Length: 119
Image 1: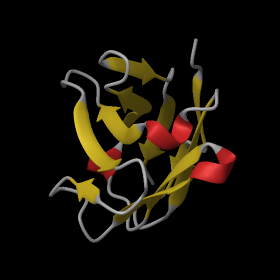
Image 2: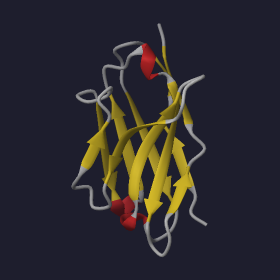
Image 3: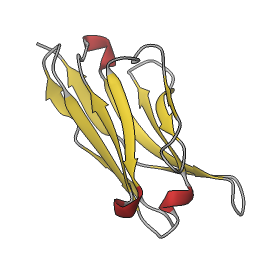
């Protein structure tokens, strides 16, 4: 079973920065599309950013474009979310997900890490 673990959350002031990190166990990490999602209290979970298995294509939600960056390091089984110019509305639990289509469509979720943006 693949285990996904996020880290790097915390409390930061508006305008500040955080870098989230996510690791996934196993030898197939380089085959996964990786994504960062977030869920604020009372709201649905939403996709923030995703990156293809080779790190050559990324997607960023409009709400974070120009402020957040997603990257991955396949040799270390790790994906990052660099968050800059943070706003109070970025406050949420951030989840990492690995997705594969082989041999069957499977999603691997982490437990989440809390990000709070507040003065």
